Image (tube, rainbow, N blue to C red; front, side):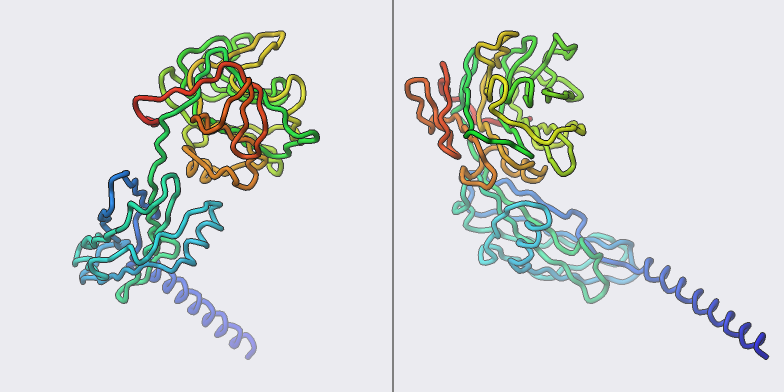
Length: 378
């Protein structure tokens, strides 16, 4: 009797499991609606006051009947959640300045893409240059479920900073003395650079022999034009920079992971694990920008232009670097040194004060040049 009971239970369990598997497979095959692109970047030109953005969603697979979809501007809370998740600091774009020409669209029978819905953005002339704004648009449908995580499209708006004044470097430099006891457990170096020529080694910034960002080291077997992070260890970028081009370069070290990362124009370029606890920027010959004055094994000058030179006591994320290549708030948390080199920092008697902490650097020969065209990357 017991054998028959167990046999019936086993058969029932098998049938239930089979039904559950079929239901799971069936669920996977059900059509779902989603935004194909999670983010949509909008560059706001200086003279723009309004512009239109086309919204379009899609189905995971075509259906024999039409599917209706709806759009709405999501709550500001969604922007806060995005910033918290990705380490960004986007400003919510005002919902009152975003108007959907219609709130619904249709994905026709046999198609996977919806008809376009126009979203009009207004008062763009009120956006602050250098700030980035985020407008989330939510998708829903009564005819099909959405795919979690793709039911919101984030429209990112920014009015680019126009940098036309930059610092000239030939055999010039800035030497900085940080407050006594400074020790960076984590850090970030950033700079806009425009090299006009390469020699055996060209100093961008840093503390020689400890933690420096430079270009080339022919004496150490590194070819001219190769960006290098060097100090107690070293590693190089995979390819050479070119002359007469603007680049944003960055070097980060995160004490938690032990990794240093090189970035080019906001994108991760190379990385390496370093066995260090941090560094003292005042060590050895001290912290220098553009040249190592009076260094006995060569001064290694950078030749070209620089702007937006920054040192942070935190490892900036890739998102943070991308968002702030052309400018940043001088009062930002963790910003320890900031030379805009656009003429706003007075240079008197060979001294220049930075825009973040008011640290006085020693300089020689830094002049400000006005460019015919704003700084731009290819």
